[in-house]
Image 1 (tube, protein in one colour):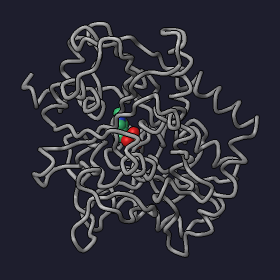
Image 2 (cartoon, helix red, strand yellow; image 1 turned 135 degrees about the vertical axis):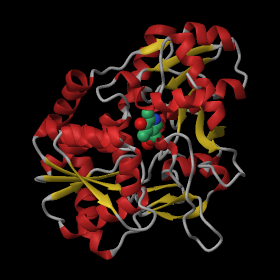
Image 3 (tube, rainbow, N blue to C red; image 1 turned 180 degrees about the vertical axis):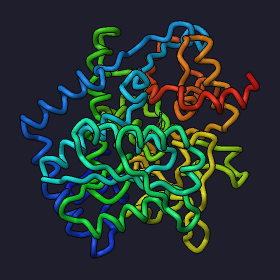
Image 4 (spheres, rainbow, N blue to C red; image 1 turned 60 degrees about the vertical axis):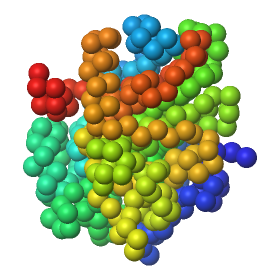
Length: 393
Ligand SMILES: *Cc1c(COP(=O)(O)O)cnc(C)c1O
């Protein structure tokens, strides 16, 4: 049995492509071409050259000495925060823009909630000189002004989504509508391991460079490519998918997935999808999502904008359902405390998303000789004001 995707586009019972008829040609074009194109030597060469010289890969695997001493175990941090643009998201946008070019696309669209994926998309569009349109809920535009400014600086057009709750799901609807109207010249860059097949698999493969590097780096440092535990935070699940990818079927390696419990799992202000979610369809994929009794999507809440998503990708739904991964929910308060702790123990200010993963060490006791690799998915510059307000610094 494999925990990776099968040839029908499913992880166990999750995944697939539940899309309106009018999107079928776009998705089918991608499905028929993504494996072939990404396997070409010229694609791999350009992808890895950009990851090296533009993104700054490989990202270091850093042994966090003082953090390890505090929790009496061996903690390595995979430093995705050191990537150009400050997080793991750029690994995926580089892969997708190279694919779009080879499909003859001349225009890129994307949706964004907090703006991080919009910035990563606008960045690679500037790099390649391709037109970029980013859909963003009107409320998010107001909340995330610095990222809106970045996208504009990079030459992207930011289009407000004015319907519904004026947030991420409405921006996604607008982007879908655009794609239906522009199927020939436009590629839609999805930002996480979500959406209809082949998106979850395609994004996981682009992020898989993370676990490919972890294997090599851990051999150098510990003489084994296998840690005892992998830890990553899960919004849609892309940094986690990249961390787990080459270890999915190696059950000697334990997997921990960390979700945002917001103000508490049962407070009604949470994004703990594994606990609160039920099977359903969101963004074209069968997965676990937070919904009301009659199937309306529940508004999620987390202090971190990147974890504030009502579903998880189908890979993670399957990891939960099969018990392959242990899911832990972390509250806003626990995450903020862990973020401050890493800042002061290691001199690294993490993104608040990442702080959720770091809070696992207060939740779970590891053995002194356990080797743990945690994906430090992003840096905290974007969250500084949030930390300052929270701690009254
Ligand atoms: C967007 C983001 C996340 C959440 O997205 P995933 O697809 O679950 O990885 C986590 N960390 C950081 C720093 C992010 O920017």
